[in-house]
Image (tube, helix red, strand yellow):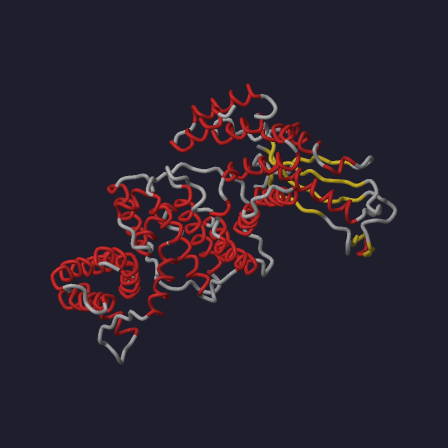
Length: 114
Length: 408
């Protein structure tokens, strides 16, 4: 069994959602993660809120971010257990982030320790 | 109370107090001596009381006999007395007289400290439960054997080995240090949770015994709540979980002792006092930031105290299972989540999710699939129930599944 990170990317993190939309989206995300956890394939995960986000640049220049020239942002990531990258991709397909056109999930194998 | 009822009752309540206080005094290495003195005290009580009738104050009688037996042992057993007397001289130099403190406070303290000592990570969960039942709850070996669906010999061996281990590990009967409480409490709570479940889900036919197991688990958990150092949110969460579950005790069995499904229970039999108490401790549990599995399970149990199906109820239960599975996966939680999912999003979607669970050898899984298929495809429902019936081991489970097949 390998571990894979599913990284949720939003095409435009500046788009503001209404509280109702946010709540509905949260529920869907929890149902998605719950479905993976019910298969005992969930390892860990976290949302990455935009509040107080900073970007540290070359020469330690700090800007409020993550937005700037690029609109694309990372909204969160979860780590799952899967037999293969194909299985991890199947998990990713269920992620509600993909309901937004232009959003993506990046599936990356987690490097093994030791 | 009549004499023939009084002695078993006193045995339940006083045996464990005397044992805990003596064991605390002598140290875990002499746990059997403490047990023997407590047993001998009751033996003498039965003999004496049947001739001379009950003493005016049976409790005081028992305590004074136990004290004297402990003192006699010290005088006649030199090896034992040397060790103990030395320890006592170390602890109380000005008063070398051997005293045994059977005050309410010392009894409570000793029981609490014993709880930590017996729920020591060096012995297995089963052994912890067994020892707790024997030493802290005053259960007989045959009762413990019945609760575990085992025999006296196996239980005796298990308890003997566990005591050996506690001796080897030199486990101290003391309150854990402030920095250790959280870690040690984890094991204690697991044991109390298992003790409660043992009573709630036990296959034992002895209904009174099963209820006693649950009540004892609640009593011991309440000991932790009464002490300010252990009156922590997760302890309250566990206690509220126990309250919510036990509120349905009267409703979950019919007159013939057969299980009554949650949906078919007569909710007027649900114990409202326990539900109220559960809600109180659930509020206590919500202080602080920690969300333990007990918080989540108590939350789920809370929603089950509302009989009426509603979108809100099942939506909340589903979300709680979503989180519970992330921090503590278990097949049964996965199946219960799927049931909640069906309630919120319908059976078709739930079946698709269920088929990913990889629990094909689990008869609860097959029973759930049968149930989900009931309204969609009766043949498939029957096939799943029949497979489940082949895998079910206990009488109750077989009966439950057979009922489902008959209802198709």
